[in-house]
Image (cartoon, rainbow, N blue to C red; front, side):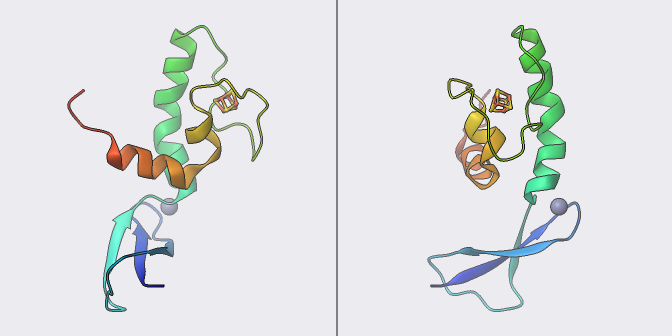
Length: 93
Ligand code: SF4
Ligand SMILES: [Zn+2]
């Protein structure tokens, strides 16, 4: 499987992700690691949750939450999926 190096723009942590192309070892892309992503997005989601009359619990569960109907659950518990979702979200809003 081909890999691409990824580096967090906030803390410098590195990891690898699968890629359909072959990249040189000195090539990397920038992103946010899961903890940094959580720090950046949590205040925004907390404001939304409070506006919606809910607790501002986003990001405060560890790896599990039983609120399966929560519209933020994918973002809250699965950070890599969240990043993919955000990258796919049109920026027209
Ligand atoms: S999944 Fe939803 S309800 Fe559960 S902690 Fe995260 S934001 Fe809160
Ligand atoms: Zn980071």
